[in-house]
Length: 278
Ligand SMILES: C[S@@+](CC[C@H](N)C(=O)[O-])C[C@H]1O[C@@H](n2cnc3c(N)ncnc32)[C@H](O)[C@@H]1O
Image (cartoon, rainbow, N blue to C red; front, top):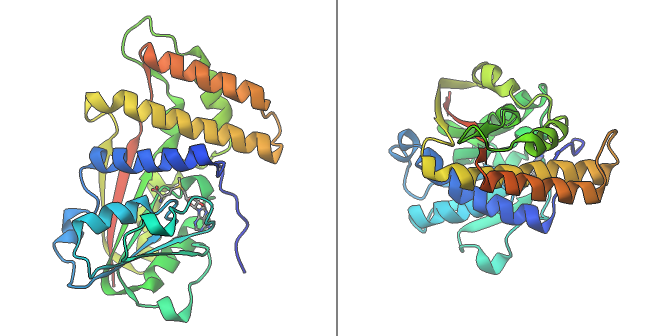
């Protein structure tokens, strides 16, 4: 039975565009698509699955780096953001599925690598073990997991590049948006032990900050504003208590964009967990 869809961001065309931009930014920010410890041990004709794949942009980027006989499978709860089939590389296959429920017998032990990126906004604390167990079951013994999450609560700390930069509109909008994801930092202290309990060993974490490269600050800030916008839109659509009106959400987005041009910026730590199936 599928789990309840509690994903906090709206699935809309603007959000699809943001996910594609975010894909390129993230690869640039962490400096790799697949961590070098996984890449160096990848077998020939590897089979890789991206759980909660969104648009499939991650797999499309991966297909450019890896031999064409690599099989790349994407699974997401919803196909609303899937790239059209004709735009996807031939070795990418997308299917609808729920990462929080046990997988099918066919996928058990099928994969050399399972990737997960940014499922945080769909998670409450007890979900992490469910997704970790699904990923562990999908992997061959000795297979690798790469799980990347952003510490989203850090987006509530609004920064400025100079003392006079205005941040008020972003502080207000961010506080409202982030009320949808109260557990957004839970994984920071808990995911490593969740992975160990799910059957992984050699769990390592590599952290990079999105403002590692100063040039990337505005780019990241615009992506983060897009995320706040998607959270606020979802609050409107679900009739959440205290939600802004649709018009106020548009105004908040414009005000945040003005502040970003004037020196306000947002950042977050990106945590890459690499773990190996026992
Ligand atoms: C922020 S997007 C990230 C997409 C992609 N991983 C990326 O990095 O571009 C989160 C994705 O998780 C998906 N999702 C949420 N809950 C899910 C679940 N229970 N099972 C599978 N996918 C889920 C959403 O539909 C959405 O596409």
